[in-house]
Length: 381
Image 1 (cartoon, rainbow, N blue to C red):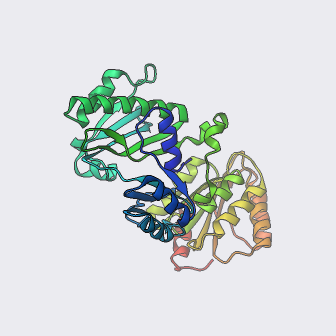
Image 2: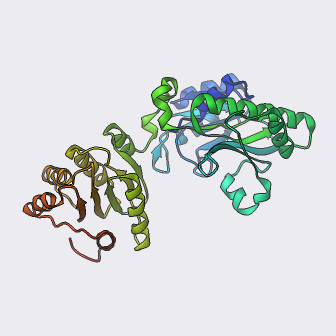
Image 3: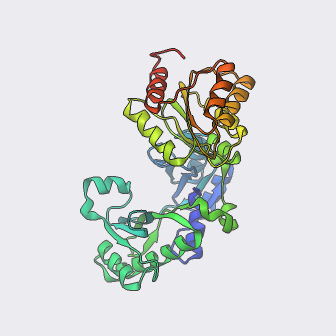
């Protein structure tokens, strides 16, 4: 679960991190009032769950309250990567001498949380890793002991030569670790971590991604979810107890089981197509899941063909077939559909589909190739 920058900053503050003050606003008038309170130059920052806010025009400097209001008029309501900006954060502009990066992420290979720090901050860490990997220090944290003081100081000196700044950075890294653990996060990030001309070290930005598996036991974090800032189809899927992630392709995939879903997406790519989503209807045998899945997928205008790839086990193929029939009767499809079914009650499923004008395939490769071809307009259903 993503949370907004202003929410992450509040969590960082509670753990003692030096984060500049800031207030949120939903109207240009309120932005102007906040700018008047702070005086001087302020930064107006779009609060949306998308990267590249600055490049999209969602982060602007305002030298006067009137300018802040004018900029807020442009930022509020704009779309960044398809998401509408409803809220902005107004914060005093900081004088910056240097920019660094500090982050923690779960590394599945080492089965540990790993710190990544770099003196090259203010830009995507992926870009730093690709172009200048020597500027990144990685430090896996032993879960038995947590981040030890000497490890934090080691990273501090990697970032700064000045002893005071290195020690200040080490303290911030320990506080970041504390916030990471307390939030049940899968990622915590400060980019940029800055020094001022006076030598202070400040966490100028904040990002936290909370592991969805932690939300049941962390009601305080679950309460921070902002569904208006999320992809609507993903919200609908979550409310329908479906595992769904929207992608940029045109082949809508409905699959049971995460492993088969990943293999299906790989095959779509292999045969020259682009998956429009990850969608797993597995875990139970309920036709309603299929109805909800088709409703969500067909709401995406980019989808040019739909692929069902079902290996029946707990999820019975006849229930999937009934779900397809029910959904398409209520809302006739406007795009072609390819159905591959095999496993539990396969013969019954094929009979149900045949009686309702559908055909079913058993070969996975053939089904994927057909779906990709249909998405490209090269065949008829």
